[in-house]
Image (cartoon, rainbow, N blue to C red; front, side, top):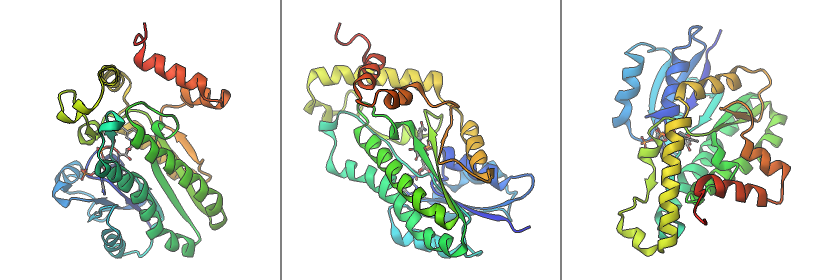
Length: 290
Ligand SMILES: NC(=O)c1ccc[n+]([C@@H]2O[C@H](COP(=O)([O-])OP(=O)(O)OC[C@H]3O[C@@H](n4cnc5c(N)ncnc54)[C@H](OP(=O)(O)O)[C@@H]3O)[C@@H](O)[C@H]2O)c1
């Protein structure tokens, strides 16, 4: 049986790396994995995980999702000349008071998370349409389904991805191409280290007022607590990817933590938004107004 060709973005660490390792090590050798990363100097970590095995199931390619030429170069390197499963996983975060964010950092988030994902899909979509089949999986976030203070740009980028994917899914079912979002809550990866984050002592924070800074401090404590107590391991996320990949009729959304998170349910049952906003504020800033 021919192997299914999978191309994954953002494989230097975290979810992308774990998924690449799992698929390349598949006991039935069902997949040929093109693990892409923007900086090949970081490939050692992935190579260590596969320990030199999987020469016929894993290929590592350079690909920066913000650079169209690098996407096209990677596409050229796919010897099968087709991709059956495209995983758009590369992403970055930006955290801090909105008024201190530079236009450059805001652009960068949108360039990677939104336009990077879209231009990757654009590059592989014509091939999938011509093949008459394909899977597009995107690493989504609960931050794309409900807003989080101090993460305005990250949430904006992930909300936008929801809209783009939902729009594509409606059309692409007519081409036997399934689009799925794997909606993650907090995951133990390098994400928190890699994200652009305003630290409390940063000069840039002098532009923010003291009330905002004290709420930001509370938010950082909340965030630390959540990651310490509720973050999933990448293996949990990979299992959900596998469910989606192996299903003959994949869903549009998969939640990595099982049920739809209660805060998202609240948004559906109370669509005017006030219940969500006050619940989220209580959870994060609990005693701020007391
Ligand atoms: N961890 C979480 O809590 C969490 C929660 C919800 C959703 N997610 C989503 O999960 C996805 C993967 O993140 P992760 O948690 O695995 O974090 P991670 O360990 O930081 O991995 C992010 C990956 O994206 C890559 N990347 C960044 N900019 C890129 C670019 N321009 N072109 C190509 N690759 C680029 C990074 O490469 P470099 O090493 O070169 O920077 C890295 O390989 C992201 O889309 C993120 O939004 C994560």
